[in-house]
Image: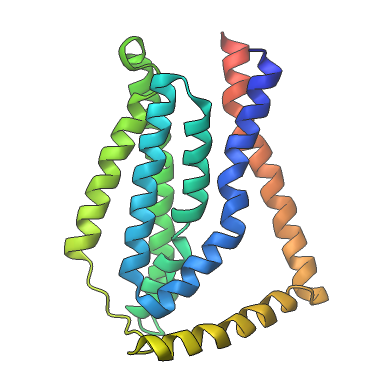
Amino acid sequence: SSQTLRASWYGILSAMPHFVAILAAPFLAWLSDYFGRKKILLIGALGAFFLCLFTALSIWFGNILLLLVGAIIAGFCTRTEPVALAVVGDRSTALDRLVNMGYLQFYIAVGAFLGPLFGGFLAQHFFATFNFSLPYIVGTLAAVVTLFITWYKFHDIYPSHFVSIARKSVAIRSEKKYLWRELHRLLNPTVFQLSLVLVLTQICWRLYYQFIPPVLKISLY
């Protein structure tokens, strides 16, 4: 296929998780308030597992549909950063909450820094055998380890708000009205202007960050 078609698919697959996450991330955070943080973190780890697995299989079998499914799963399941921030808030005092949230962002940045380096090393040195699938195979194994650690080591201290299913259903119905009110507040001029600045900032750096690999591939090879 042409470089233009490849770049188009690259943009679609890069944007798809973020498009799905527009609704999924707030919904996962909302569910964590009622069903506990641990369950949602497990869903996120399971989503990372299927994301890497489907991506590895799509590369191995040359099926772009599996790649698209993996991107959609990533948007639905792996956007658990708000839940992780909520966990930090649950386990912190008012004095050290911001510092602990800074630590969380630090470790996220460490993973985002080391992941591409390690993945690039694996893809470069084992390309003849695994093509580009090996980094995703390793990612699948990392997701299994994440599931294990979350299941056995993480203790959910955030209590459920309700005990019976009936009371939960009533709360969910009232929460829908609350969510609608919160979405309506996005139209507030001050909030909207600040949000617009953040959206434009994200567009700028995503355009740069996401399309560096195609540019390097075309320029170097």
